[in-house]
Image 1 (tube, rainbow, N blue to C red):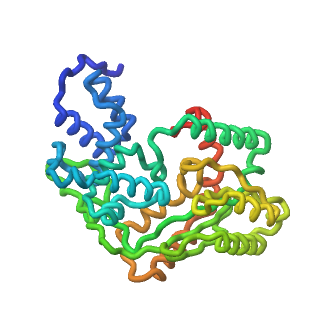
Image 2: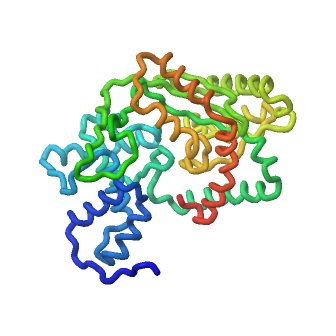
Image 3: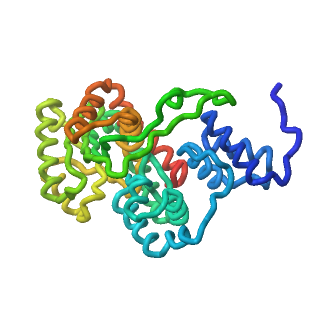
Length: 359
């Protein structure tokens, strides 16, 4: 017979609430689970779910203190309207930008960047910055598209999913900060346990942009470019033709059966151009709502494990970085890619269940 909560603790201090969050987060528990447990104990005095999630994020990023940080005068100037405007513009155009990059770009502290991001109402979903609160129109669009795809899946099954070719972009760094020593091994932390040492990020670390296309059988195309090179319609057209050639060579019969392209063409402003490109190849362009990484296989299944694999490794050039990425993809079993594509049905279903909101 399970134990029952004997009483509710009233008027806990901020330090107590934050210490509880820190302890439970260190045990590996998720924000939703932490919030539910704390709500049972502290009742109306409990932090909101948003506050619990924010403190979980802070502690997992290396923060140790549960006290409020000092806010000297210059820090207030750092949250000027110009910095807020520039940061929001950057988040909209580069949804995978890192907090440290924003801090370096604006010349402000990482803590100030977090404050501005929280004030703007953004959160990380599948390693992309997305609005924490979607507008009703955005939810409606996500709901309608997910429902449309889900109904098609119910009618056609895996035959529908097997035709999908999905693509996306990811920024690969020459050095991705990680933990070293005992901190790399999952463990319960006690008084005598050594603290995880987090590597310091390098201010001018090199990076290269990866473009990947894949289907349920594996990788179809890997391309790399400098992050300073913008994706033009001409470049995207060349990529699609290279992809078509690779499909013809590695997937006999797939072009004849029909290709359904799932791609977030956020870097190309004229979506009509993308539509015409895809139609010229006799492919179908699958509808994909903006700012929806939870509905993109590369985002919710591929890039997370890739990032973990590169963490803590240092590369001396773009070529070394590219070789490591290619090796990682080469070592993925076919089941890994099948799960990425087949999980789409689950993601669509979740989006419908939450009325278009993030689950």
